[in-house]
Amino acid sequence: MVNGWQYGQGARLGCLEQSMTGAPTPAAGIADPQGIALYHAHIYYDPASTRHQAAALREQLAMAFPDARLGNWHDQPVGPHTQAMYQVVFQPERLAAILPWLMLNRQGLAVLIHPETGNDYADHLRHAAWLGAVLAIKAEVLSGAR
Image 1 (spheres, one colour):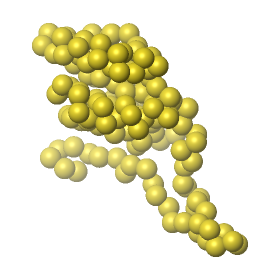
Image 2 (cartoon, rainbow, N blue to C red; image 1 turned 90 degrees about the vertical axis):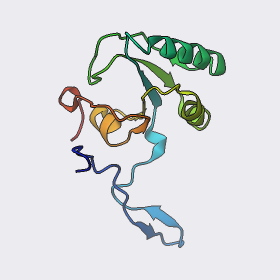
Image 3 (cartoon, rainbow, N blue to C red; image 1 turned 45 degrees about the horizontal axis):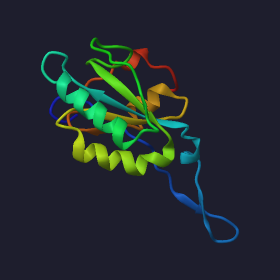
């Protein structure tokens, strides 16, 4: 517990074992990144005070990454998200370009980036990265292994 916040354990990193050839092989519990189907970036905003920043960021994202899919505006909390947001969906090979771009251009907005592995709970709470403020997520509405 840090400053009243309870943090998850994050992704478990196991030890590497040596194969018969001497090359390291993943130990049990190591997830293969090839299992990531997509990435989601959730851009959070306040409809009354920062929606214009979110709109400018959305427009810039669309120009910089035309292959990314921009989701609907949600001015009210939806699903596990406790603040207004929109989602950006992109292919795994685009993470190396989109992540640093968001780091530098998020305009002070909070951003949650997570993989799409088929386990919503783990994707949003264990495998996620935050840019800016870390916001509350309603874990109880997420499906998947706890």
